[in-house]
Amino acid sequence: MIIKKRFAKLPLYVIEEQKVNPLTKDLFLCELTEFLIRRNTLWSENIILDNHLLIFCTKGSGIIQIAHDLVPFSQNQYCIIPQGFLFKVQTMDTDPSVFLTCKFNGEKTKIMEKEFTVVRDLIPSVNNMVANRLMLFDELFNNLKKGFYNANYQYINLCFGHLLATFLYASKTSEDIIEEQNPGISRAIHFMEQNLDKKLTLDEIADEAGYSPSYLITIFSKKTSYSPLSYFSHLKINKACEYLDFSKLKIKEISFILGYIDPYYFSKDFQKKIGLSPRNYRKRINIKN
Image 1 (cartoon, rainbow, N blue to C red):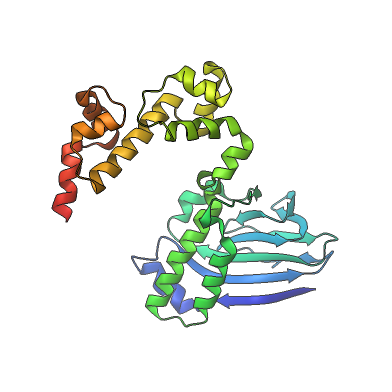
Image 2: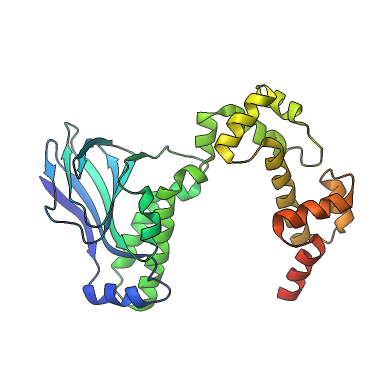
């Protein structure tokens, strides 16, 4: 048996309006549903999808079929089925299974499609507030009850964009994932963050991580796309931006606080990473204010 616990479908005229609205045409929500599905039940719409479909399993398990592929699907996993596909879900012995689904579309979805069709894990995170997806689903359901006037739907779409990002970019936003997969990298980053006033060497960072310098470079670059020392330099420049934005410290003072012996080298490094000199970066704040 399949029960729709919550359901909201946007009228066709509203969707057509959002397709041409500059604020929403890139990404817009079409339908939102919470399904409760009993054990050993086949769920399929038996039609080719006219929108992309996000399926998020919050309880239970099953087998999902996309095209000719059969993939196990369980709690804290999600999949996005592209427009133009058929799908089927066969639930297992767990009773019941619960799925939250979103149908959506928009011009930007063509760029996102490389992330679709793969069943992915969502590792729970206590540090990552955007990972509270159930709260965002509730926010969408609650606001869809308020009607389809333009301002409300624009807000709904902005919330949905946030929700979708927590799925597509989950691995980019959760500190817990890095720590669980490689605690050495987490130790290295924490060590850098606590020593922005120093000129750390690769050997010092590697020793803190518990790896040899060559091995640290290999795994750190693979996980972050930066070498450890380059990452450390970026942390320093980010902190410099904070000082320039929110303090009256002189540029020379900031360079010394961040462990740069030569203020000229600090300015050169800042220009390379930010695209502005420290002086012009601070001027931009004055002009804006």
